[in-house]
Image 1 (spheres, helix red, strand yellow):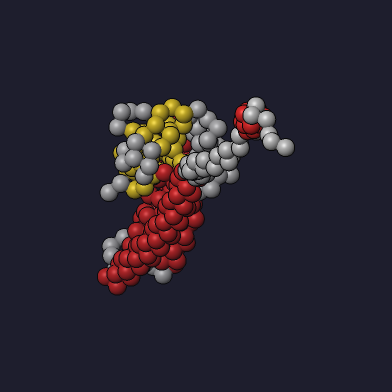
Image 2 (cartoon, one colour; image 1 turned 30 degrees about the horizontal axis):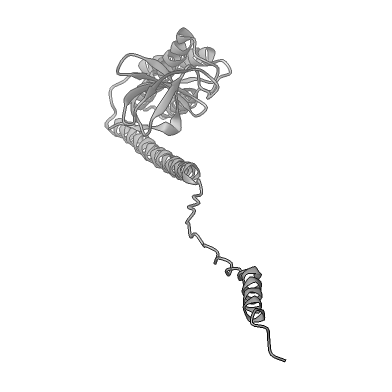
Length: 252
């Protein structure tokens, strides 16, 4: 059988129609885009480090001050021993040379020393008075030399005892006149000091008291008294207050 001349074109149109209805292939999924970024994380340690350094610096400073105190005490002890030996040598010299001094003069000097020591004890009351111990020791030595008929030596030692007792009495009278705090001890002489760091000067010897003013490192002050790790100071502007002992050092 021969194909119809119309069938061929119809079959071509049908094939083309089917080809047009086939859905196109989907494109492959896009590759993910990776974005590289850097996040900087910093630990906040600055304050901690500063505090640590400050604490270590203070501990070092306190340790150095303690050593300075020990060295100072050793020097004082050496000087006291040298002074005691010098006194003994004076007394020995007086005994050898038979220094002119009558028995009555020596006895009068001893009596005056005893009176000065009694006055000191009255002024001190129950407070510690190292001058009493020193004056008593000299008075005992004076009596011993008197018994040896070294009246010049006895008079010399009695005079030293009277002088020391008198200084102690004056010190306690200054304490009463100044109305010092309990436990506050005035220095025999004003001490020139300077601050080792920026320091607060307070109304009283405690961190709980009001800050009166602040001194910069190296500020010159003069200490007049002390109590429990604090010193009372006057600055060059005439201001006065309390500062922690660890924050100042001796000014040459």
